[in-house]
Length: 199
Image (cartoon, rainbow, N blue to C red; front, side, top):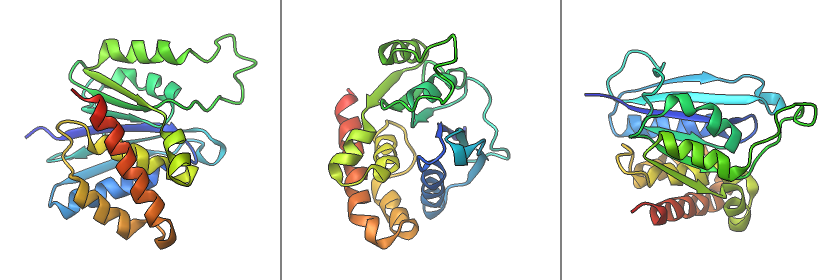
């Protein structure tokens, strides 16, 4: 059986690694095989961070170009950088709040318009779900819950192999106790928003 391939991208400090850990533990709770490969980059300085995850039978975490089922992008430009990983059957869940690279002012290539990024991704995928995960996180109580908003969005995607209840159990096991109420609400809001965008 073909594994379910997930490519998670963003920048350091957005909680991408923690999101990957919760997904991985959720898969193990379901007795599903899971392999994960992480690229931290300059994660301590807001540099690029990405994770490749395969849920199902696989011997390597490396995903071939064009073979991703879900691109989960915590930052718009990083979503665009991952465009070579998707195909016409892929779903893209993308946070719309940009983090501008420190050298963008010196660059001859300005940060692209959000609409341009979405259109480009849409032309290569089945569906792009663009949500203001940062805004949702602030609304539920803390910007640091943004990664759980994104995780909730992933859980709403058709064909995603992990169910809400199992993910939420893994959240309880992996998040600080005091942060659980806000993170649970963030997860639910991300799930609700993305569910409303899927026909």
